[in-house]
Image (tube, rainbow, N blue to C red; front, top):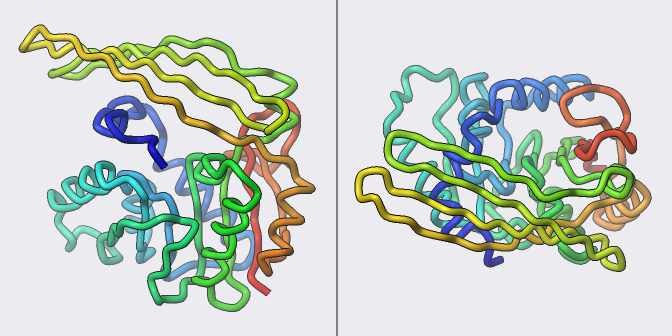
Length: 258
């Protein structure tokens, strides 16, 4: 997977307004609602480990796995600056691996894939492989949660060109997002152009990356889950307990290991 190469270096700045605290609280609330108060958890597609860190603050021991070495390095640097004694669980362990194939030889109470990890899986085979990874690492009765782009909402409210600006003490970033829908593949090619101005050196750098995102529909999710040996439990709109609808792009799925 070629995404998150140069782009990853600016990831935390680009998403500094993302509310990892509230998102983690919601995920744990969903788990609790379905009878799971995890002592340990596997985060497939952990990125820089921000959700994993919030889990640790709440007493959950987390193993995070990601395919981007750059993002893992950023996460490890963040963790190195923390005092483990300030947490009620050990600090997260971040490992390199592909969510489709990684095996860490441990069982967990829950597995999660957050911030559209599943929509980065562009084929049914990829989605099935990630689900099988989750099942392999769950205790019997354990839960797998993942968020995703919900197809009816994407088609009802198609993506459009967006421009967003960010800055810190060192850089000013302009990100231009130009999406293109491949209707016959249920895919959105999200084309990023990122212009970085180094404030001190007065230099400009331009990055271009395409993130290919798959939008999903409930029948295919339920079918693939069954093939992976996971039971469909519930669907929610991201950050609330309403069912998914054409009014919200982002949904959350709850699956249980048989």
